[in-house]
Image 1: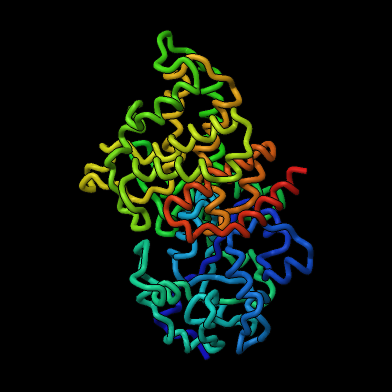
Image 2: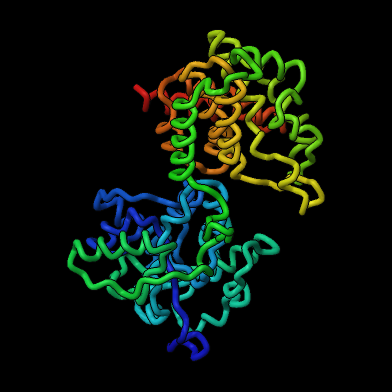
Length: 440
């Protein structure tokens, strides 16, 4: 059957990390099983639990097999899956590129399609007859709002076209990129393999962006740019230690003593006191949460087993871990309530630069760098366990097992201060063992 006239003008989209482009130009877009069969490396932007379901989900028409035997494409321009992986810092959105293909691919016997994302426990309906395109929820597919009213509509927006085994990349009409820098990288890859590129352009509908005076920004900062921001801040701090002629605190321990006595002893933590939050999982204001994190930290075996200097560093970091949620003036537009802000760890970095170089008279490089690292990455362990963030990110930023234990301790204290039931000691131990093995 032919594609109904009302759908002939449409396109379908596949998004991937730009690092995968070189392999894609050599081999084409490949199904997961094909990549595994050929032993090809791939920078995956997918979630492991979803991929587990797709690997065993039956395709009930066309060439049959499992979903992992097919190259996936979306009918929608704005993917809820991309929103999830960006919000949870699994990928830097700036490095995502889209391939746009004509919907006429569906005429091939190698293609099937489904009426919702093939990533849930209950599989969607699969079709091979193009006339069944009418059964898809096109209102949801064309919805460009960032979020959908419910999970059903979210899944229906992500209805998929599936191409068996491989897809010739020369069939792409367009490559959609974040900016000129990525465009130049794409052009360079095409030139290196002597292929003529399709049109390469920009289209904000495919991305989740904010616009400020300084230009276009991803709604959340991903792993690459978090690490870049941390290293820049740590370098500034090390180069400017002890620069103030009349510091408020002679040594780091004096800052800890003052914080123990009064959270309001420095402006950055004072701003947390009484700062209410929109985050439904938090009880009380940010200041109350901070004090609870410090209290929980003191009861952990990881903390008690540290040497005194590491205890000092970790405790100070616990007092400072949420300063990026302030100041209160940030939230005047929201009736003074702090909105959920995944970027609050890196928003703390400029504040740490001042605290560690201006407020403290004498502090060594290692404690200063570690406080910066613990604050910037205090959410990483919890996000790896609960949100699919990559273990490689943790491996890349910890230098030794001592640092790993400090990050785990502050993460556990933070989780327990929100809801102790969420703490999964088995998963944390499993993560610890994997990272220690990497470190060896």
